[in-house]
Image 1 (spheres, rainbow, N blue to C red):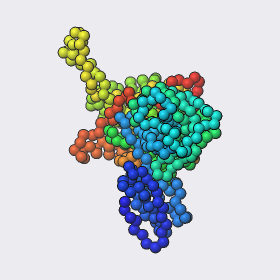
Image 2: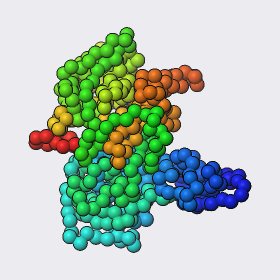
Image 3: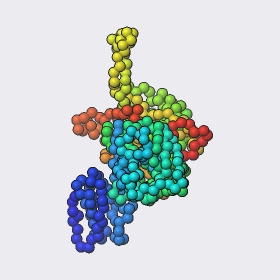
Image 4: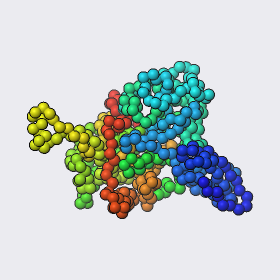
Length: 466
């Protein structure tokens, strides 16, 4: 790391960062001279949000921790954290509230890394012996309540933090996934244990941001901490959900390449309730809405050759119109395809069909039928976060949204009009390949068997309050 150049009186702070993220020297030093701040911090560990005023010491809100979310198959994004000093990977899930961890108590769980309470000096069992079954879209998990010391990055810590040890589960994707925990970061209280603070509450995190890089196999990023200096160049969307990061979806449309705009009058009329969810791999929507959209969008060529002629999907959130271009709502997947050539047909007639594995393109939608207090439910998952840098603010009950640029940084949306910024971000992604001699980027390649379904997949009777 570089040593800060300074003169005169100075104050310094030493911060610890994991070796894997900060190179050989895990000690980071921050120096302050009057109103200027000098630092020697690897960029992959931190970004500092503005200068620190000379009020004595740096507070937690002065530093934004840049938390890498590793990519598994372009459908699961997981980050590292520690519980009881043990290093695990977790899905940092804006669609749920509780911290669930695969435990050594789960004898039938094949995961290699599990939390072991006997190796911790800070573990505390729940005196009441509380058990609970958590139900996710991917399946149920039976758990026991306990308390532990949880840390994220070099300085974020919660103790004692309520968490749930998974003793058995039927979440198939968890058996071969690269994560061992689901870390709920919803904005409300836990609906299971309301008298125990959530991780965000315990860590006193009022704001964080999420973004996923668009390149195939690229990581996602979480930014822990407040960045108020970015708010003015982003679009704010009111969070109306009482317990979820829920917003009002007040209509959808299609923007065609010839300039026509088609309003989807039968979809979200008058409104839907939408949740922005980092734990959902696709875009979840009512089956009828998906049918209307895919019929109007038209067929997607299996080789994606017509992707640039497909319309852009527009969503109205908080009175603002946001665009999802075809490269955001189309994915590629490797699927078995029956040989339909004449020779292939003859093989079928001879009961020797030839099946090949080919890469095909398809819509990034999954069906979910549920009513909310604002209408039918939509869940904007990873495809949304690939397109938009999204800030979640618990205090103001707002989302701040900007098109995601290179390196998952927000592109300024001047005067809250997104079209030019979206064009800029999309053009950058589209033509970056041309400038380097490469073809424009294809939609991400995914295995749909590895997708993580919304926390809610099956219909809950009546109206679900988001």
